[in-house]
Image (spheres, rainbow, N blue to C red):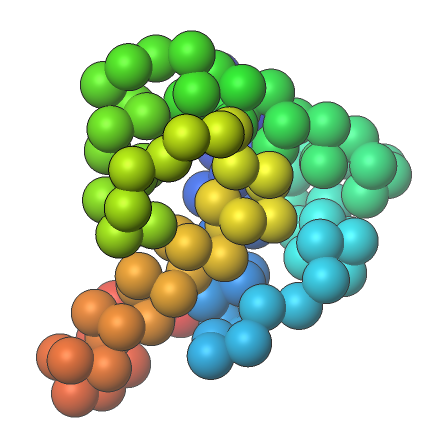
Length: 103
């Protein structure tokens, strides 16, 4: 699904800014061209669809919950999911002691 590719791009961009996560509009604008979109809002809508799909899939939801370090009672917002995934990548990079794997 297209939304997963866009989710990847946005998480990768958010990872570059860790330990803080930029605003979603900024992130969506940063990946707009790479995602083949003309408007950051279109990128955001693709993220919403990806989050919806993850939430509806029990296996994917359980996998996503690991990045939140808790059971998810409510569907996360795209911003919350992106931030959780970027924090996870940042913490893995920090514990590995460098920028291995980071662009």
